[in-house]
Length: 307
Image (cartoon, rainbow, N blue to C red; front, side, top):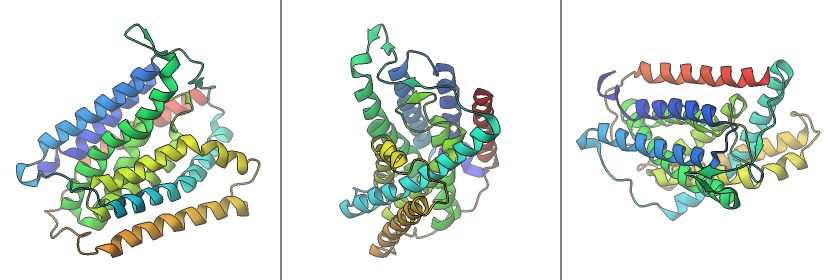
């Protein structure tokens, strides 16, 4: 595993495993804002440790965001949003048939929210949106679409590195998601396909934009749309089969928009999208083993709740 044994990928997966344990332990409690704060602190801490683990020669600041790439990445994240929700809703439908329904979640506006003796319920919704749309995605983007993406691109080249960083990042997002809470970003086993799609688009946006900020634009837009537009999407398509032409039209159009945005980013500066050279290929098997084992734990928790 060479120099990547304790690199950014390893710290990202450990962060996901820790947050899975924390979110599971706090599900159903009155510590709503604490859950978001823990996610932010754990992700920021993992990013700091990953940066320290990066060789000095490889440390560099992400370049200033290109406004055009920010817009293109944001539109790509919005395009993939509907596709991700189609995949997540379909997965949840299949899980309901096999394993049953999940218990009713806590309603954010009705659930108590206490932190250090303070009653945060009057501001809990606003705090949840701030954490879910801006603060946590920003910390995750620094870790996943900044440090992990650079590490994987250096190891495997820009194409394979972008895919692998997206897959690993999507898995970490699924592990880190809040559980049994509405409205919130999706969580549980059913959310995994959507996060994998969002992770791949964010990773490619960061690679093609040569900055984690482009990945953050895609990631943050996906998070915002998931909170603000999900009910409208599901209400408009309620009662329709997953192969209904209206669902498929949304899926095809959204995927097409995301693909076009990424292609435009590539064409804007094709040479800059490709690192000058790739490092010696490595195979951090332990990173992927931990990720898979933790996703199995996520699946076990989700299926146990449905039983």
